[in-house]
Amino acid sequence: MADSYLTVDRGQQFLLPPDMRDWLDPDHLVFFLLDVLESLDLSVLHRGRVGGVGRRGYDPEVLLAVLLYGYCSGVRSSRKLELLCGVDVAFRVIAGGYLPDHTTIARFRNEHGCDAEEVFVRVLELCAAAGLVDVGVVAIDGTKMAGDASINRNRTREWVEKAFAEAEEVDAAEDVEYGEGRGDELPAEWRAGEGRKDRIRAVLEEMDERRRVEQEAMESDDAAWVERVERAGANGKLPTGKRPRYREVEAARESLDAALKERAEMMAARQARIDGGERIRGAAPKEEGTAVRVRRKRLADAIERAETHAAKAGKELKANLTDPQSRVMPTKGKGWVQGYNAQAAVTEDGFVVAAEVFNVPGDVDLAEPMMAQTVTNSAAARAGDVGTVLFDAGYFSEANITMPGPKRLIAFAKSHRMKKTDPTIGPPPAGVSPVEAMRHEMRTPEGAETYAKRQHVVEPVFGDWKHLRNFRRFSLRSLEKVNAEWRLQATAHNIAKAHRIGMAI
Image (cartoon, rainbow, N blue to C red; front, side, top):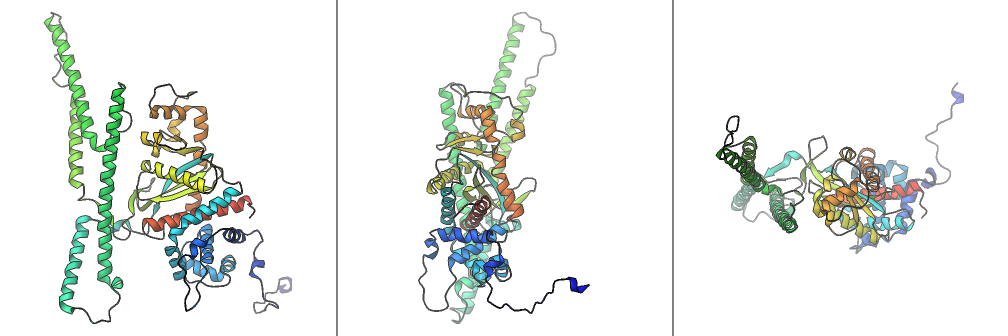
């Protein structure tokens, strides 16, 4: 019976040295990836290479190929990449039989993160030259990505300042006890005390920067609101758009004043009827009606919230000790995550034309930088002029509607709610506000049909990266480095997309 099986002799040697490339299909992704990188000008990776004595280093283009194929395959861990370079045929072909250790791979990713944007644009340019990138319709959206930090490592400024003071006291005591030291200590940046103080100092600087940005945003929102009020008043209309949160007390007070005025007019009219001899049935109305009481309660609540917010401002500002630039981000149905808001702009045919990471939880302030990057990258890649940009309701604001740039469609509600709104046809009526004009355009058959493409364009990309490529968490820390990771993933996505389509190099 055993004679019917193929004989396995693991001790059998090759008569001639094998060619590893023969072990893979000629159309394998790894060969396409290598051809793509070979056709690009990657001189940016060789900047700063001065040579010298010692062992030769690994070619940075080889290390880039290892990383990109890893991102295509859903592998980002430098230790796993090191292992695969020894046991996986595709990785062995890329590395040419060499075994770069995980430290080398991680160091390369750290040192060349700033080059990820240029590599991304060069790959996009190659795809555009092949006629694969059509920027007629581009959808922009974001997803929350966990960072390499625990949400439990957030601390208030008071805690951080206390820790810094304690570190200073320890250093001062050690200076008195040990003087200048023995001369055989570790380098300063490797000492626990020095590293701790540097990390604490970075956290304090990040808090100061956040406070400055928040103050500038508050002043900008306030100036925009005042401008809308003045513009609407000149036209005899009410201002459109959302009132700044810190003007909530002002809005509640205006509402109460209007209710009091209306109540006073009603009471005066009633008294005039009585003075005229008219008999009015029923009990006399109370001095304050329900509308006045409700608005008075709203004003009291608004004042209380404003006072609470003012008391907490600064005192409750927190930063993460592990990654100070990461933020606590709300997620859809999953609570909160310590991480970043990762944005991408995707064409109708599935190519990523812009990718950037922000530490801002909301999307509304990210429409302008993402649209600008989309236009810039499309021009740099010679992909043509951007046609229509699609945004979901998270980006809806008058500022995003009126800012310069390509035509855009911004949803004013969730998709299932938009379908229930009354459809319309034709251009918006003359004299309507930008917000009303956008609402009108979204309700036209043409606008609804174009916007419907959004959910089939950008959301599947995030689903592919998170669930098929296992990219749910950044491996690096700081805004600069997570941006490099995000763009490496976008580059790998475009290469894999072009390979599936069958682009010829």
